[in-house]
Length: 302
Image (cartoon, rainbow, N blue to C red; front, side):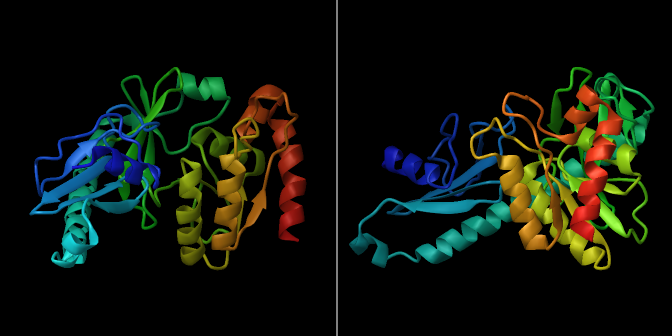
């Protein structure tokens, strides 16, 4: 088996294993860590087959990407039903993903029941925010992640020092956290992080939805657009101006386009390390956020 060729195929879809799992456990899903993912998250998966022709189907449970690699020449390929093998492998991976997410959601529900209501936490103090709908479990601040129907599907754990992680195996794509009532809202603000969501809610009094990361803005916005067709949706982007490609703005623009919503973007000087509305809150005060966001909201919704 040509490992170098396989790794090249994986890299072409943005999957870079930290270590390559076994390729000899044919027909069994092998999990592995992907570079730049959280340590031990094991979001990567692959299935290998070698019934005379090496075939590997692989993907990322985090991004939903799936692809495949076949080690053989055209003469060999003609004698194999490759499409069926690949289809079966993807179905097997999907079934395992559903089971992982189900078990993670069940465990999150147990932890949520054990936790107590949160009124304060060092993270909230540092971010100068109030807490909405969060709970405490030991030293951890728990931020609930719900699906569009209000079912708890996962949790975000925030340590006192601000480090964050999601429940291993839990679903985040399409997951969200509402700040304020979601009954017939006229306007809904959508943003990435919880601290930014809290800042926006405190500054405007409007319902805010936390999508947790830039990649999740589009799935969340599309779901909200479907569930609340009469509401005006406004994505409040992060401005990652110090990061190549500025993923905060890039992903927010893409989400706004696909979900047909408005977009507001905070502006920063080139040397300013701030990236979001909470940074403005912490560094310049909540009044500054209010003074910035209200004219922007009026401008995009007129």
